[in-house]
Length: 240
Image (tube, rainbow, N blue to C red; front, side, top):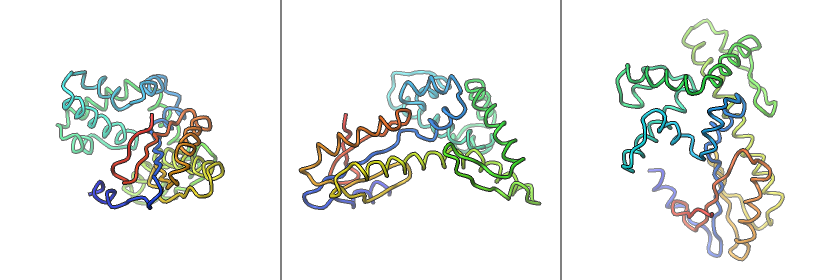
């Protein structure tokens, strides 16, 4: 459905879309904040989900099977760092509870510094009642002191989520503000979806504008943005 809707978004005649999509930004934020050495090492492969898939499930030359393993690893990477239990993980991975517990144990063994950091952060936030992202933005979480244990548990899961997503969205916004300053005024920002920005650029400025967009890597070297261009939103081609 999403891809179908994107196919309905077409650039104006004489213009081309430029998309900048922050690659695995939330996990990159987690790796940098926690300074987990294995997670930082896995990021150097440029595909942390694939690195996790290989560690958890092994490698196969079958592309379809490897793609399926990567998808499971991606689901698990996000689920576990945001506090999913074995029941939720088993549901997401369509596996048994025993397999889910085994995966969780292996994930913790792979990234021990990450999990230690998350526990330290949770303790600190419970004491102070608010989170602080990497840019100093504060979010109070009063539900941590709610009378209902269900509400308290849900609030506790919000701690890492808030810090990670709050930092990620600030990075995207700062990059967006930077591009607004350096791109020609005729290049228009038309959409911002999660970790992606979509600009509409006059064709005569396309080459120049793409080069300017590539300079974002100098502002955020630890957070690469994938750049794509095209006239139909669901048919954009990656710029190497």
